[in-house]
Image 1 (cartoon, rainbow, N blue to C red):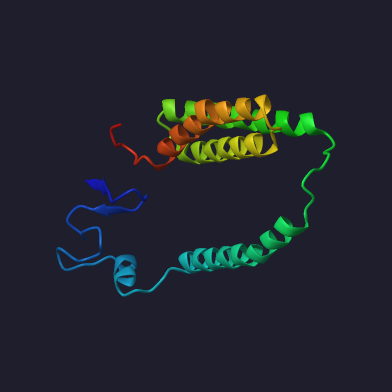
Image 2 (tube, one colour):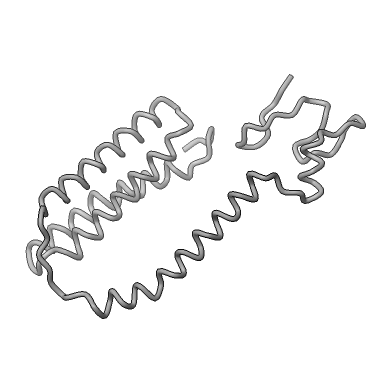
Length: 168
């Protein structure tokens, strides 16, 4: 009989070895003993290097934020303003529908769609409130952010981090 070890797709035959590769009947799996010895698989090294590259890129962006904060004008006119907002809201709708359908069907990929939808909703709330004119426009943007966009983003984030098989 085979059993699932953790949330990965790694399987171990019952009686061969426990999940961390310690032999139970005198024979250990070679890949488990490599992990126990601290040897990284080639793919995991590549992922680790890609992760560090992303960290470096993020750190390089920090000085650029100062340049933007000090050099950009306080007001600007944007071409195709309605297209930008309709496009963002359309992406949110697709993300919410995809996350909802995948979660309702019990598909393991629902956290990906839920993460994308949550991100889009937070971005929408941010830009709605920061680009709104003072007065009733800002009040409407803040109400939409607090009553719709951010609660939906929180729900999507909860769906994204919820462990498979865990009860709500």
